Amino acid sequence: MSALPSVLFIDDEEHLRIAGAQTFDLADIACQTFSNAQDALDHIARSFPGVVVTDVRMPGMDGVTLLERALAIDPELPVILITGHGDVDLAVRCLKNGAYDFLEKPTEPARLVDSVRRAIDKRVLTLENRQLRRQIGATDVVEARITGRSDAVNALRAQVRTIAQTDADVLITGDTGTGKEVVARAIHRASERAEGPFVLVNCAALPEGLIESELFGHEAGAFAGATRARFGKFEHARRGVLCLDEIDSLPMPLQAKLLQSIQSRTITRLGSNEAIELDIRIIAIAKSGLETAVAEGRFRDDLMYRLNVVTLHLPPVKDRREDIPRLFTALLNEASVRYRKPVPEVPGAYLSQLAEREWPGNVRELRNAADRFLLGLDSGLTQTEAVRSLPEQMASHEKALIAAAISAHGGRLKDTYQALGLSRKTLYEKMQKHGLSRFDFTDDG
Image 1 (cartoon, one colour):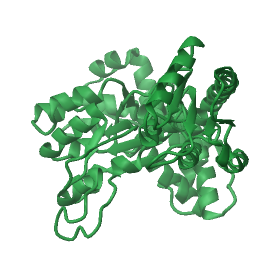
Image 2 (spheres, rainbow, N blue to C red):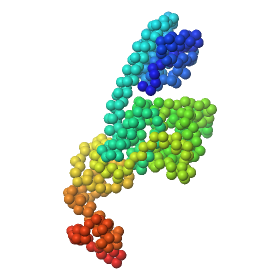
Image 3 (cartoon, rainbow, N blue to C red):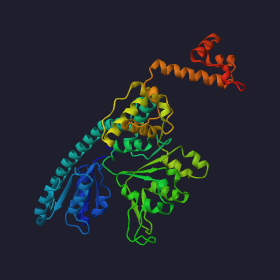
Image 4 (spheres, rainbow, N blue to C red):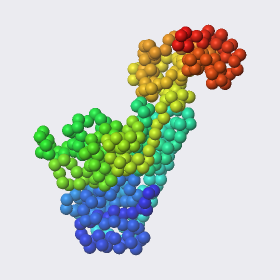
């Protein structure tokens, strides 16, 4: 756990708060006291390593409402109710609805401490079990979402598992189609925030005049057409992850407000002066490193430094060719579910041919190829290419390399065989084998 077990003690009467604090201090139990339920509720999260002790009758939010809201955040959080004699029936009903215990006023210190200790023991066990399940589940989640066995992908998965166990903000970069959103979702699913929302915002797709309202929300009357208050994406991501895709497309004026919100973890809706505290994690996505955008004056350097504390760069598919057959098969299985069609048999030679291609669109392009293969449409490869044997593929590759070298040296064979590391005799033999003539590669040929 990230902190020592503690008690949130809520009572609107000051002398009872003082007495409660002294009781817990003598029992060597950390305690925070609150005069109202709302302030205590702001400290409650699924990761909170403690218990709640609250009076039932209080102005504003009462103890029963606090119980309901606390259990909505975490159904396994121990909440102990302190009741007057007339509230016993109510307390019994609350036990059926998830309260851990109830104590009658005046509360005996020994009874209070005993109940709290048992509740803390239960909370510690709950959080330890969750952590164990996360460690086991994180492997499954990351393994299932990030496919491949290349060194680059193995390293990426290890980084994702490590990052997921922290609450640090993350910057993910990579070429179009490399799977940046997939990695962002894997981090979320393997983290303590997995049961919280994952709110994806494509910054490039938001109309410039509405970006601020979309992100930060607005009050009624904040601008023409704002007939009622509205949450922004930041508030929708409470206790979860806000994923800002194509963050480098945000206008410069909005970047300053975004920086302030990320640093303070507060936002202010349009038309309001009230700061709203948030419990969120930020994952930013950009096509390339933000240094270029900073150098061109399109992105604030202080915002870049705030975002790139933890940076993941995703490799293009061409740098992990050994993963292409496995990737294609996984994407084909996904397509089978989407289109409700059986998975066809894929010839090994076909997979080998896929691995030879460059795939400038990366995983996105490979997904399209899997869809076309499943639907029986043209995959961009001829049937002859798909069924070539391994020796035929190797011969074709060798011919292409030799032809490229002869062309690069203008038909000069000495330069060619030296560049290829071959003897003169070997080059002649291979040219004859593949039907190549140097005159086909000279300017006057």
